Image (tube, rainbow, N blue to C red; front, top):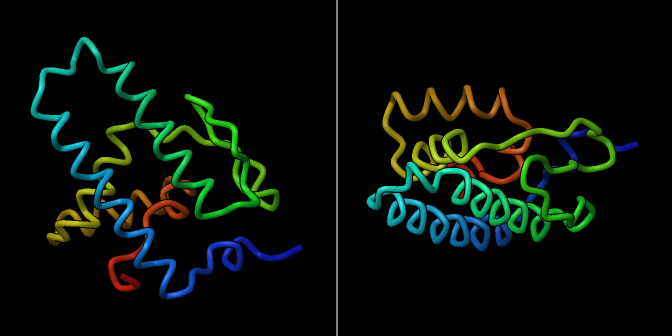
Length: 127
């Protein structure tokens, strides 16, 4: 069986394409954040989870394509399922695109805490 690290290898071209996709998602998230979404938080979180799941499925065709709201089954070599909440991923995306020192620290912590984030969001250095 191949290692977890090998399953996350990207070509340079894929990195650039994926970064553009994430930039769109990031802009979309910010436009929504300006509107009062507290009462709509669950609905928005579900939609965001679907977006992330689709991005994950496009990047890793071998991964589960099921658009599950709460969890996303990772590659077969990484059996655990994880919940990627909107706030969790937004912090990661913010660090990815705005890279301040504190954001970079958040990004590192998020990568360690969530294997899904590692799959979806690439390191700034590779983009």
